[in-house]
Length: 408
Image 1: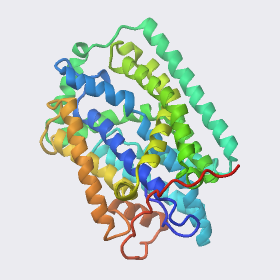
Image 2: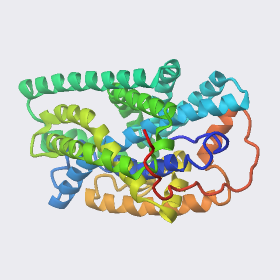
Image 3: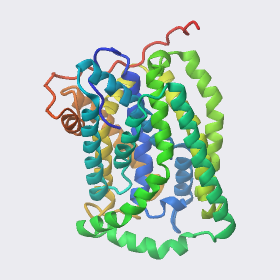
Image 4: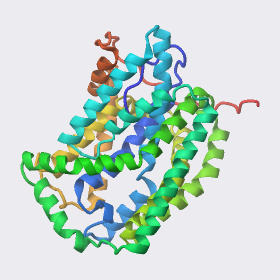
């Protein structure tokens, strides 16, 4: 989700695929965050007055989107870590101080984002896990993948065990029973700026605990990205149509089946006691659906569409923060105060409009400058100096025609 090093030197013209993936992932992040920022009933699949259309859209977002796009961003973060390390080596600069400054800058941006805009921020967690990733930076690709698999399996078992205990020993939480708590949250979010800040601070510890719970899953995706970058997976396979199709054929059925089970547990027909069981299934199967999405995008998107997505990906941090700002202005007392007044279907339609505007805006912005505002700030912190002006950024190289399958 953060800016990368300049696209020069070791992989000329080939990091466009990463930018395309990052730009696409922004849509999934927006759809999930918008549900959470629009209503207190998002985790229950809709409030007592939700329409059938709203429940159907929420169910589909859970099945197809939730957990998959943060996973893609995490994979790209690990991939970018290796690229940044190579860039520091080429520049003859010590990587450790640069990485530490970057982590501190990312944490600071995340803290401001969590307090001011959305307590479900992911940047602080990324910053903390980036320190762990630095300690694991020299793992061989196969070892990194084994550790990643171990983390995923361990978290799956823990969530499944606790989830089954929850099913056996507790009563379901209904929207009606949740209504008193929801009413207090609604009143705060529809108030002035001060109550909004207050509810952010109250919700932040719970959000951080949730991030800590799923930190092994994010670290596993970091490690997968680390291993992929060390083997130059995207550079070797990003335009290999036969390989991309094979991944989709193998992974898509598993990912879709897991998404359906997750949505049934989180959004019905199963009740709220099954929530953690559904998330255990999601942790185990979401990587398959994420990989299918990534390969399908690289297989299908070409030309102008790829350039547009790549521009959004190069300004991913700016776009992520802008999404939260717009949603806060729409749903909280910062602006229109539409919290719990807009159905999930309408929220999703609005997200598509906002995403389209971001695609157009990113392309226009990066036709005039190399970095988005947030990327420029983070890069300045990382380098401990303002980057030298370099004129307009050239469009990222989009994926071209499929290359012949490499000979083993």
